Image 1 (tube, helix red, strand yellow):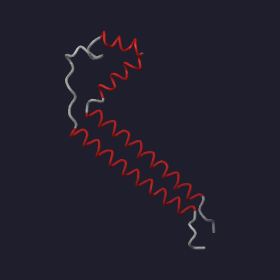
Image 2 (cartoon, rainbow, N blue to C red; image 1 turned 60 degrees about the vertical axis):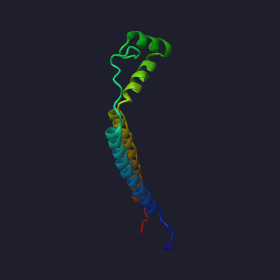
Image 3 (cartoon, rainbow, N blue to C red; image 1 turned 180 degrees about the vertical axis):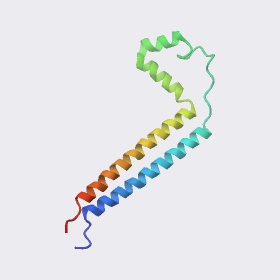
Image 4 (cartoon, one colour; image 1 turned 90 degrees about the vertical axis):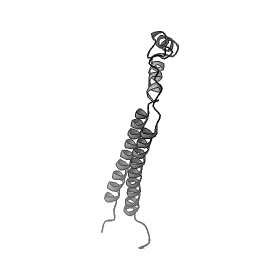
Length: 120
């Protein structure tokens, strides 16, 4: 009877694995963000280019008519994502939310393991 795994011990093990996964996600995400920011090439300076939606009202209007406001928003977003700093921030935010999810679910599992523990 001693070699049967109780639900509380398996919940504790799963919670510990989730906490470890959360710490790894946070550390790897922050490391990847630092590498992208440090090693990333800066975007080309297109401030004098008339073919971009940010510098040409005609181009912006054409995108808005053909694709809509969302297309104009996506065009600006894609231009912003050419910057390594923006990429690094996005990686950091995603890793933060993944780690937060891991910590949240590990806490739920730990609480579930305590409430379903054996009663002697």
